[in-house]
Length: 268
Image 1 (cartoon, rainbow, N blue to C red):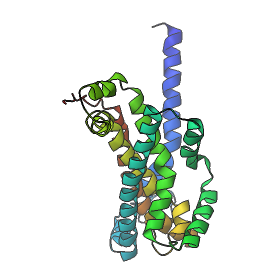
Image 2 (tube, one colour):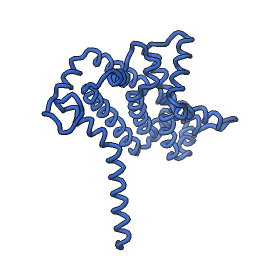
Image 3 (cartoon, rainbow, N blue to C red):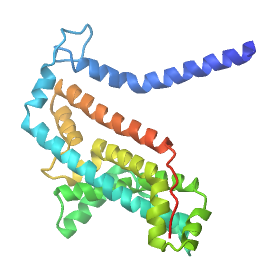
Image 4 (cartoon, rainbow, N blue to C red):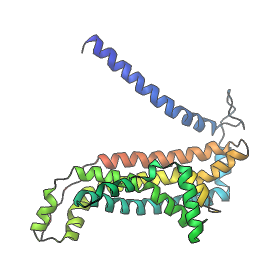
């Protein structure tokens, strides 16, 4: 390696470290302050304490919000992944008129500002009489996360040999069995990955949840209410928990998506 190439490599490494430092330093600071005995996040730090974690563990409102967040994220991940798989397979297998319009509508939700989507969801749910329910949050988050599931599964299907499904048909498998025995096993890593990612997105989302949740608060909504009231060190503890859950789900999603699923042979 020449001196110029070595310099370029070190510059790129420094740039990557700088970018990751810029992204994660506020999170690291929040985790550090969650163990700080002082009420205000100032330097120098006070003594080490787990007081704020004890406080949130003894708070019934936090536990209720955590249960709601878990129910919403799990339900959203299942529904969004199922619909996302159906949409991705439709795009992969079929050609029909206005297909590009169909895909444009399917991928539209993430491009809409969250505040606009939240207001639209609130108005629609109020009109049909389901506003302020847990299922309102699940429905809203499902709409928001379907495009993520679709994109992940569609990328996986792009790697599949198109002749495999046709071979299953030639061996006597019906279209439904070909999907069950060929498509789903091949797309399984992407399916599980999309479940993890959509669960993480749902678990973190607060703008839409704040508008449609009513009294059924999720963890991000509770955090928002705390920080708008006063400075409370419990926020750092709750935020550390949310970050741990979200990062675990995102890392799992990435690992699973990179996993090469084993192809299975279809027997008639």
